[in-house]
Length: 314
Image (tube, rainbow, N blue to C red; front, side):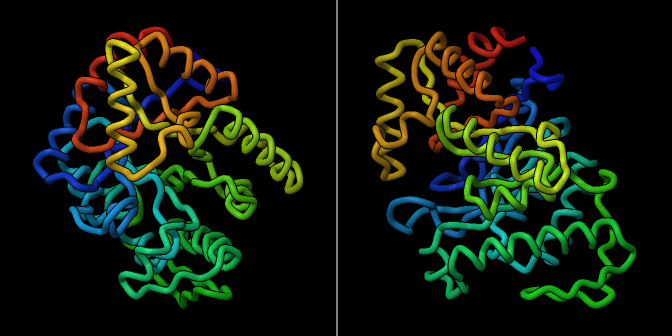
């Protein structure tokens, strides 16, 4: 199935928190074996909800291990936070992951939001306006490092003086760029640089964000239809609606979330319910799906998705 000339894409985000490395790696490999097109981690220093205790895997080392532990799937992090690390360091690491994966990296960037992580680790957490400005500068800087033999950049927050980034990414001119977020600052950066916009939320929120993005693209003379719309709803899928509701309650509880406040942005139910939910997103213009899976990873749901849901969209 295609929408506006784009085939539908289905991937999986495995939340790299409160789990063990063997369990995480097994889930990554299972997602690839089942035929999903991409597998993603996240970018956090602490579990992103609830108490700070529990494992939370470092992002770039996790991506490197994913690159070497898979053969086909594309890999990425939804989404790298622009202010967790200097963008030149991120550009170097991302280029290396693209090399290690044989050109399978999906590069992502967002303004970052988990303030408590920055406070806990003693990292600067500027206001939202500055984070958007840093996001914009970071994208310019990263692209220069990937495409120029030596990069010089003089921004308000970042500077480069004849910096070399070798080896370059395998993908030319660089890996696809996904911007995550729905704020005006993120959308402006997406209009300038993105090949894809990733949104968390309901189909209506996805459609609204896409409409804003198209208007911003018009302002700068870019065709907004060239930017793919992506979302990553949390998945609670089971054979029956009752079972799926119990799964959703467990996931919400493990993330200290109010299920009713997030329900519109989740896919909850039996296969027929999830098919209807996916169609609502497709009607909103989404062609790229990344299903968020919380630990302990429900690999049975991934199998059920492949056997009873995704064939409806083939």
